[in-house]
Image (cartoon, rainbow, N blue to C red):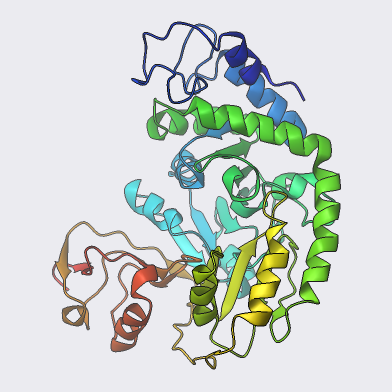
Length: 411
């Protein structure tokens, strides 16, 4: 893989900077702006265009665009591009899907769970299907393609590394029209680095939405690191992942009474036990070990080439420093709707304290992050059970505003 963006930056690395950013290269010389040699992300010109063509070759996608504001921005771009279509959102998904529907006033959007997918296709006849390819625990969601007339948008944020090793899940790029990768989640890319892949026939819609939504000050530092990371993993990723397979298999033998939860992505290490895993998480942090997430009484670790040496230390802490384990707590769960649901939009709202919201209709979605799928949708009545869930997960709730709930003004 060629690296035209890095080549251009390195060829001009010691230029005299009388342009933005204000640090003039004193923080990092690769942190530059749109110059005569550096291309323009929003216009898809110069070395950035050349770099994106190289990345598309690696991923075997028709077209792609760098994103330097995270996969959330890519999700917004994808949904804005088809905001005039009938959209079906399927199963667990990121909260930004619903914020996009609200922001862009997508009035013909529906939701269903995976078990209702076929019925929803039959009843709604959507133009667009949006779903998440892999969940937070590394389980691949295998959604069948019903019709080639449907546009499939796939959030594969946690699967940017799938392309580089055959024992990982198969990437949705094989069939989907738009695929979103959050590069920084699993590759050596700074936070905010992402890519949106798409078929060439949708380039006009994607690029129009892109210029409306993406910052006109993209990070060249992030784009340059993304280009190098993709080149590196395209070259040596297979060997890296073979080493990880062996190491993670050994790890699972070292950690009784904990157990590794089987999933589709072995680099997403999920452990559980009969004990309270949140208390385990808190203890691990005292020893300098921080997990990606803790939910469903599971601790989730993202294992990479760059942190693999910490697995031995993690296993030692699990075996020797957790003598006062607390039994697993039973917590209330709010079941995800199994009905096909129209996603409502409303204009006026009020912010109220938690208990004042009981019996009122919600203005926006409420979700526990991760994974971020709503347990309350816009228009749903807020119950005492919902308030209990909010209280028990106060630090993980998306949809609160300064510990208040937004409710329909006249509900």
